[in-house]
Length: 248
Image (cartoon, rainbow, N blue to C red; front, side):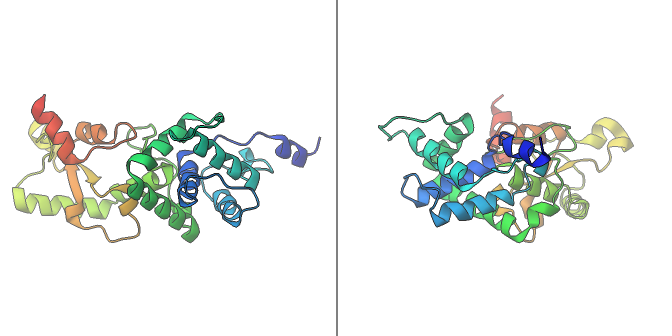
């Protein structure tokens, strides 16, 4: 069998949250109605999904995210809508989660979809590292998808911004400590912990695009608080985590 034949027979990889967000956004724009494969909007989205840096070419196959597959995904989303009274198709967990997000926070999710589209179209996602959270060694979930999370963490780990934030913080407070729980690494670990802290970008994923990061957008956190903020697909704000710390 030829290599082309094998690729053509390969089953397409499962849809990532980023992809489902774009498909659901299209369904929303179409009044929560499914779209057909010949629809120009489906063809355009098919082309866009094929440019997303999520699935390597080796796992794609010849039919990867073609218009038929994209149209089928719009059917899955429409039939998962709580107001749909017809026969439901077998959509996945991510379909239901993304649908819920669009129903509960539509404006925010439409903004997320716009940011994902923009990042694909301008090629900025291609320049990002694939690892989401290299410091912890495992992937971090985000309801806004992997691509915006990659861009977000790349900004958090910018060493120049971190140094500027720490210097400004020391100038104001005289020392470095976690802005949520107050933990001071130097007080606990001596000189080994001096100036050690993690930098958190407090701006939401869909708003932290190609803009200049201001120091007031950054929050200094200990490793535990930083991890708790990013735990799960719905991230907390520093204020929300502080409220939890104060009540425990």
